[in-house]
Amino acid sequence: MDILISSATHRSGSTMLQRIFNARENTLIWGEHKGVLTDFCNLQKKLNNYSSRFKKQRISYFNTNENPSNWIATMNPSNEFINNAVHQSVKAFLDNLYAQHRETHDIIGFKEVRYGQDELELFRKCYPKAKIILLVRDPRDVWKSHSFNLRIEAYNNSLIKFIQKWKNHVSYYMDFAKKDPKTYFLKYEDIIERKPETINMLLDAADITIEELNSVLNVKISGIKKGPNNPNDIQQIENMCKNIMEQLNYSIEA
Image 1 (cartoon, rainbow, N blue to C red):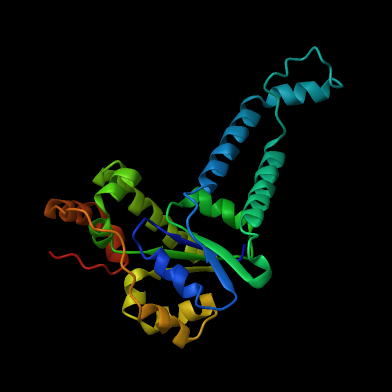
Image 2: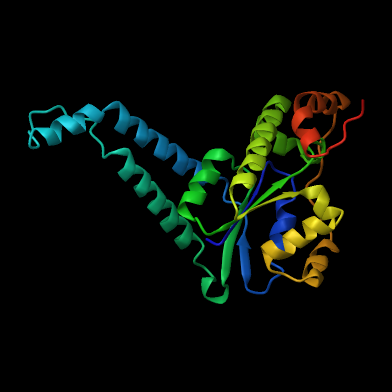
């Protein structure tokens, strides 16, 4: 994998970024896969939990010359071997999943709208040289942009769940981008407004020309039908997300 485009939530502009990167002739950024890396993260946690909880079984068995009289029902390899197995499994899975059309593209990646700290850290350990593109958008506009069905599917129609996800993911994205030299942190609004610093960053990340970028931005693709909006929802978003929104220069009326 060469590129991961990860937006903090649905409806943040990840498809637009996907199209921008695909404007380069030999780049292929695939779409969402419904967050399958989360399953690998959960698998890793389960195995590491068992390995740590029942560490004595492993130690006792190998310290007694593999005596079969030892209780070994939940004996597992050490955490080091578990983590390595998961990392190798992730790489094998993604590399084979996205092997289609690999021969005609020199840059391959995918975009997702469900990933937070665990998934990004796992991806980075598996692909230390890959570019990671992190995308955020004003939470008020994100919520307004959701369809009713998407609110049900993604957050069980809970505004609080949406707010918590936005806060957790955006906060971590900002932190991650500061520490990782191969990560690009982008605001949806800065792309749409074509702010020079953001545009230059995007041209570098996608390895495209300004003409190729504009060829995408100049074409608007209609999205999903927006759901109903309650003014109280926006107020609650502002109240609960205020600190992070201010860091991102998302204005809040006094």
